[in-house]
Image (cartoon, rainbow, N blue to C red):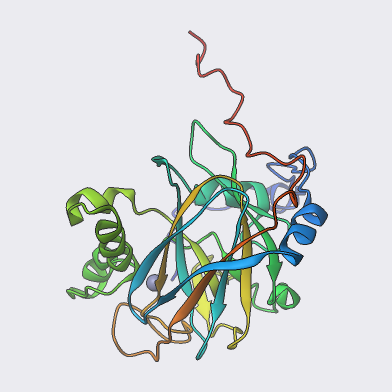
Length: 286
Ligand SMILES: [Zn+2]
């Protein structure tokens, strides 16, 4: 992909390019994550629920505030597209773009999924990531991104004129409609940009294009979260499988994914409470 430019570089182009970047959102002032408290609560927690997500399908699950949920690879390398909502108010949902601005392109242990405006509060905190060792590879790729959107039938139709119905967007729409007992048309607007669980992605250094590569996930790997608020989750086992080649088709090998919910012992979260809604007064200068 060559970018078009009709303008010659100015004389000081090299100087302008050499300006050092500054981090947009230094995140040292974010509320501290009580990771040790979460991990000790998790150590005594018991499994209370599980949902097996079928390949090229999605399923919903609920996690009360103060409980944990784990997403596992079970039979083969498989990536999942995760949506999260406030279980009591679907208008408050995961905000991929702001999470990216706060934590960077990929998430791991101790980082959080943040909710949409005007709430902007943590909804889930990652407490364990068995792929945390992967880091950033030589291509600029890493796992669990918040840079992709979700595979969807509209982009597929735009690019290759297909009608494909098992993209994550459609899978999540069907699962949410079934869970809520509403029509597909009512459910679809609630589906939003995802956390790409286990997916290995980045941007090419030369053209800045979004890339994916075979996920390093193997059966037994998992990503585990602490629910900061009452959550409704939707997880789609992406038709891309391990995303080594393509999605928006039934070509790739796909596997199920397991979601398990764990409840800590009573009193294990002494002193903890759900985060409050964002403190901005919403007067917007009026
Ligand atoms: Zn997908």
